[in-house]
Image (cartoon, rainbow, N blue to C red):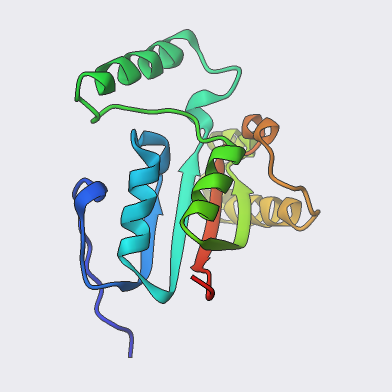
Length: 172
């Protein structure tokens, strides 16, 4: 039997619950102003044998992003400085994430990248072939992950989403 799950939709900085088997952060990190404090909250709410499922996007920040997207990102950071964090977004660098993971004594047990521009073909595929297209797209991206590419910031322009599974360091 699976344990009960509780979904909390609130600013994570101050959330404290009974430590959980899993903490899920889906497309949030790139919108967090105080990332060290965010990771401290993750750690505080995670059991010693728990897992973190962390996903973040870089699609807002790739080099070919249009002028309007860049302007929105700049405006969101300015608003965050005066206390309005609701539209904040900032790219997550590989070095920053590595430091946050290490500082909070977490271990990366899975690290995959997804969300290539192959998805732009979907509208061109007839409705009768869309399920097959989706299966092939997923298989293609999973296959790319099996090639041993070490994640680095330059890959943001190719893979717009990163998915990690983190575990508590047993020595913490």
